[in-house]
Length: 59
Image 1 (spheres, rainbow, N blue to C red):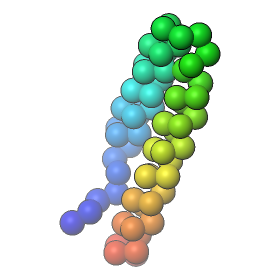
Image 2 (image 1 turned 135 degrees about the vertical axis):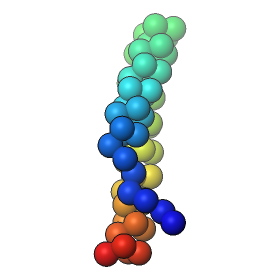
Image 3 (image 1 turned 45 degrees about the horizontal axis):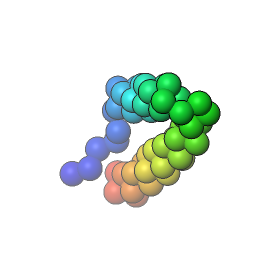
């Protein structure tokens, strides 16, 4: 049974994206922003897709 994604998961993913982008930016100046754009777009797409599927089955 699929469940709605818990709030703590959003906080964890946002933190991981930020920490990873910071690490990338330390290695290559300016490279963190493309990662943030890609990662947040993918996370948002996954989250919306999951919520739509959950609402279809649980009203």
